[in-house]
Image 1 (cartoon, rainbow, N blue to C red):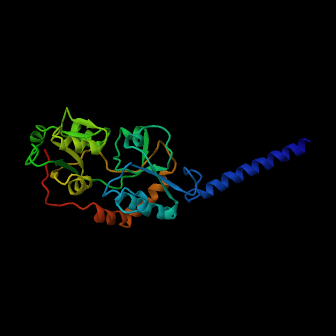
Image 2 (image 1 turned 135 degrees about the horizontal axis):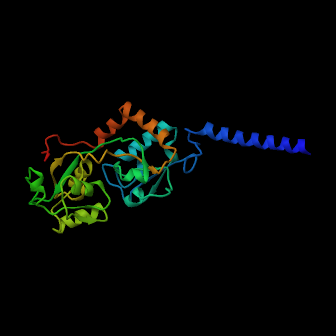
Length: 275
């Protein structure tokens, strides 16, 4: 009986080791057991999404900088386009601590030290310029210094690096705060604020489509606390290394630069305020 019991233990141990080996062999493949749903790449983004980041409020359409990059990334990782699953959540939900019901999120999420304390980021894949957006006749129109910018009434979206930029770089102490970008521009049109600051690609779309009366009055220097955009994962998600390897390939082979040139073009003649 003791011999049979020992044999059974060895068999059970062998089965367990075999299962562990099989799982390890699938890591770094679409069947990776560490995925939220093995066989699928589950990606979170906003509700709604805006050009040029994603066109037609359709992440699955693949047209736009961010969803174009995700499908290129998925292909590099071995996923077919139909195996990319999109889920929607707010920006605040993305950056909040806790469990995530997806593999990672993409929504122009800037990498910051404060956020990195509660979530994990991929490497930075894009660093946008900041732009001042205002309606004609705003006090920021023609401004050439930070002191002149501080004379205006500012607004930004809660929880964003845009708001942090106003406070920490421009020194705006009483910026109005709104739940989303739509609220910011509605406030501008209602003459409740004079200006806002957003990433340049967003500013290009806003002034061309959403609020065509608005204009980009200046570009601003980078915020040293904003390292650029990264993919956001649940804290210590083990998938990060695999995703970073694929991102590195896209950066080195020029795929991300191609998407920047297609969707995130800027006018080099725009004025720049540096101090």
